[in-house]
Length: 147
Image 1 (spheres, rainbow, N blue to C red):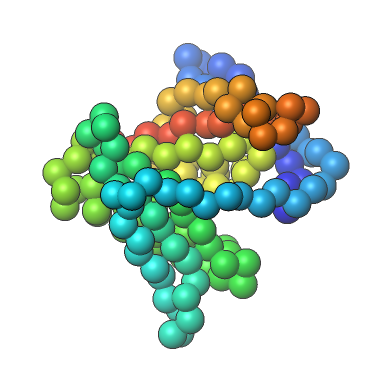
Image 2: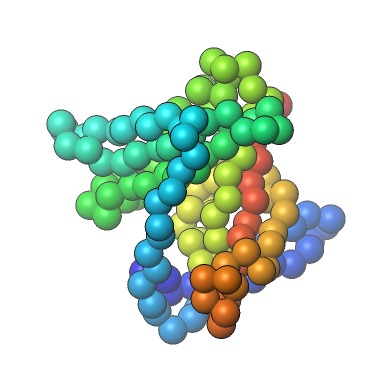
């Protein structure tokens, strides 16, 4: 459920998001990951709680194609554990870091990536227009690299 969006602005030479309310609407995602994708599943008390789909990207990063946490398991550390797993996976494959894309309409994910040390590297305001011409969604590209 989208209830807030992140509006982009530059502050101190950094791209940052300012939270703003919107009329609530349900956002769904089509899942279509590339063939080299690995699937990692997080379990909580024997139940599948989340899923990470990732694989090497052409630029030497690990690309997170999907990071999904079941509604009943949100805000319980599952997303953070999956992000940390992606970082460890990138390291184990000797990749330069982790990259992923999310949208300004998914502020909980954006805040998670910020807390996990990701940097907002860029955006594309037209990526979702082909799916919905009136869409307010902006694709946000995040990066994590070792310190």
